[in-house]
Length: 296
Image (cartoon, rainbow, N blue to C red; front, side, top):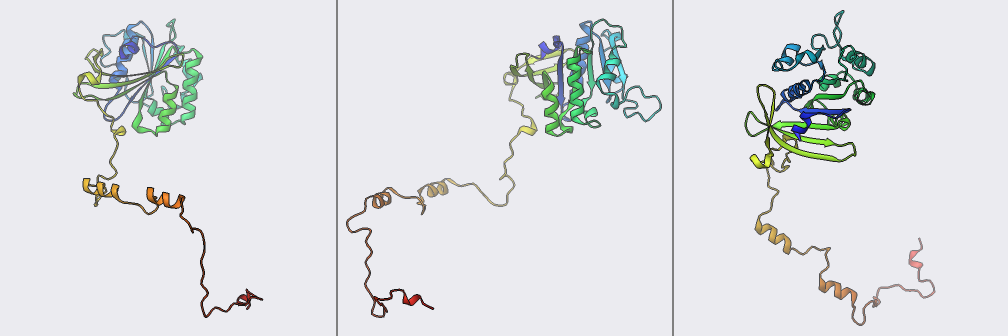
């Protein structure tokens, strides 16, 4: 499925590459840029986190003349008099005007490096609104965004990923030069497809898919998904031995009726239910006023 996504994103598609501090997704992002350029399409990059030189490193063999870098790295908040691009320009009107300045006949692909930088300075609803307008407005053919999942609350990540047609979560592989791509793809009909693939990236930014994690070794588990044992660091033991467990199973609880007790209660013998009272010699009983002992 990773190869299929690299070969072409559908018009109106929105791809998110989701990474963490333990495994960067920027090399995979550059591989997607390289694949788009090789399809003779134009690419506009909103660069917030790396410089133009660093982004283009490794893309020298690509038709780089169709890559348009909008420098938001030098002055992202507009503190100087003439900033190239700021985070406050992340809106439909500004972005549509930006991508129309090039003479390429087809709508370009917009690459956002990264969505995390924008989400730290703009509200998530405003960012989601702009992304949705870009998808539906036709100003760009597709959107590819890098998102650092461990920088945001889960609700923020979920809101942005809900807009995406495809999400690639990058986690570390078994070997240092490998990574695992956990892919979720939504078709136009609403069908959701999921897959996991082990991949590596060559120096020319070509992606080599090596197979499924189950075919290459033990399945990698995301540290956030690992279940923690709440009894691991206690100073006392909450677990039962086999002997204690057997004794517990044999223990008769006071509120649990045995078969014999149920039978005795449901099938009472003769004389049951009668109250027998023998008067005491000291009883003061007056037939005329049986309740005189209640008078005060």
